[in-house]
Length: 320
Image (cartoon, rainbow, N blue to C red):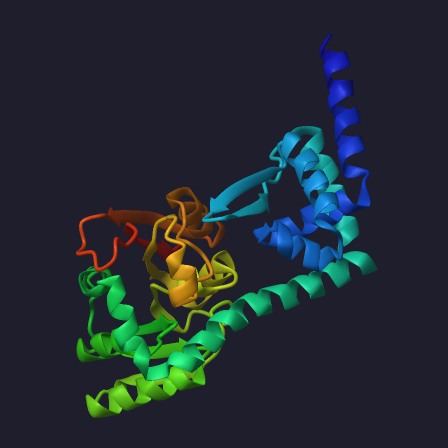
């Protein structure tokens, strides 16, 4: 009986992974969480075809889906043992030099760039006015609590998505040296003006760059912050991995953001890419980034300007 069951499982594995479209989908979803429309764009296929393959992969237990407002995102849940794991490892190895898979990865990069471009265009447009718009977050207390996790004058810290430099200025005023990174030149101009007015520019170095490709060397900083930034990024998990890269062994990564919510108005008015994140997803990102001693503090008591979602502060350290 056991042999018969094993044979049936093996048959299911081969049947599922013998289809080239399903393999392409898994290859993409192993790299990035995507919605159906994004898969359609990358693969050049109709919704009905993509959805049919997603249903088969989900029934096989190879996918995890997450509702994000009116969208459903999918990601690959790699098998951890047995015939599924062994077969996928073999398939993945063959994908590395496959021309179709290479084209898919290039198309995926373009799709992720388009995600980021929407946020970048928004921030280039609002520029210095962002300080007034961001008051809707009511996040002054959260910012102070996040900073308190690494207070130690003389440290070098990265402020990822520095925007108009509010957090960078607060960190510099505490005696830290700050590297502020943002992909919007207009936001960086606003940050430079603010820091000059507060006589803090000597403690802050502003660099233009993307959160998932930070213009910072490996282990260059003692700590890295991303304050209300992840929900604007095309690939939050990838950005967190890059934050871990730039932190020295024993250094900390601190993230402040929204928990998963359904406030669709934030997409329209604030151009967020993601409607927050489940705590389990945040934990998974920190783990994949190789960070340890994770501490997550959630908060639902901050003042609300417009029924804002609950927030979290997550911090962990890079292994010594």
